[in-house]
Image 1: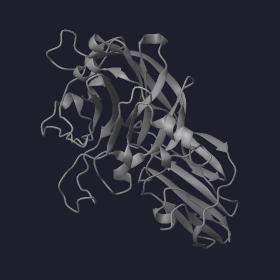
Image 2: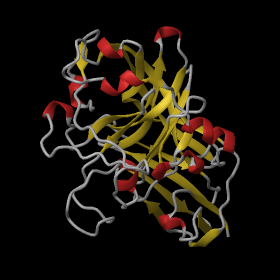
Image 3: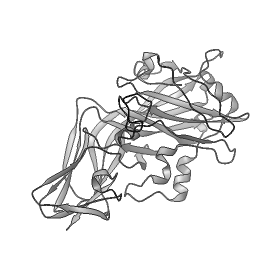
Image 4: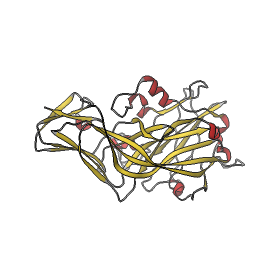
Length: 353
């Protein structure tokens, strides 16, 4: 099922029915592949060709759900061809476009759902520290739904699965980058129009009394026609403020509510000091020079968005609209978190030479 631009047309309190695009079965080893039809209802497709998907996996007793935005890049380095495939914003930012690799576990005691290409084991905290094993396991966990959930959105049901547009929660802090620098090579962070960030979703089952749990991601184009640059950054976590919308389940989805990102409230309005993080794969950066990074996959921050009653993930790729520069006034070294060097690393630092 998918939901994209059609949500923007729903008035406050209005409802929208979800549409089933594809159904499949696993093979004997539990593997499956979802193939979307070539022609999709344009109301469910974003201006950039992306589609928000809700994937339901079910056995004879239970179901679990995961959500993400499928992108349609024109060219992919994964297939070394010009043939369009369905990918994700995270993979596209790293120039490694590829379909999501979804993993589901329908265990009654520990249900899980996550994308293996963005395993929480590789996520970080606001200070760039890896999530603990328990925190990563918590990020993979999800809620268990009844077996009947596998039919949500089917056109032949008496009460189609839908969502009603609820409260808009504004000014939620979104921390998407840790800038580790020193006074001789201060950082400048840029964000401009048409920026796409991948932000976490929350799900609540069993009505208002149910617990909220993370449940996938949505990639949104942040407010067009606006932007900001933040110069002179030294050892700080930077971020935006984003707006989230409550969507209340209706019909066959009456017990399932979601909180999902909708728009940006403010660009680069967060700059919080943190302890310096130094990486070891370094090269010289000469005084008087300016270095920048405007491509590559950024890290995923496990608690990147604080919603008050829960935290969800945040990730932004480095691209032409989200860029970091180092203005070097004293000879320095730029260091990357990966052995391939800072230019291709998801996280970087600047240190005294």
